[in-house]
Length: 187
Image (cartoon, helix red, strand yellow):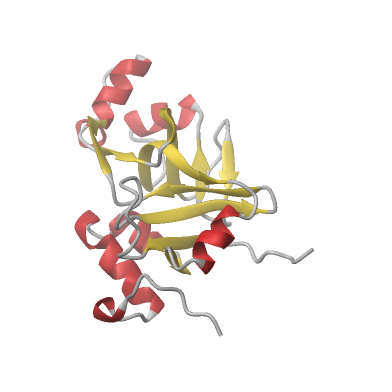
């Protein structure tokens, strides 16, 4: 069996040739990757919702206005009725997957309550749904030249303008946007 190098804490950048409407020109933060598959959150697609809509649905009253106005992201096509909070710092929340020593993804109500009360993490992104791959699927898609990958940073996850995330992520790989091709090269 070939050992897989984990892509957790990496960005998956859709190649221009990737036509799937869920992933075209997407940037996905990989939260978990092992022999069982991979899970990530798309960080450059918005829903039509604002965080106030999520607060209202959960009965979280009187949220801080700046947090209530925050966008809600389309995290991916899997369980797109379930919320995921990508955040930094890690903190102590009811249900958190630690991706690094400082970045985590949480699914518990307590983090949303804390965000609404301005006691949440300093940086966060709330998404509905996630991107998922079965065992070996992501590796196969990378070998088929569907994805580039690059090291993630809190800067691109939380502070880079949404419309610049794909281009900025491509630049992290050192690739030239005009020379990207959809054809895989094999020796």
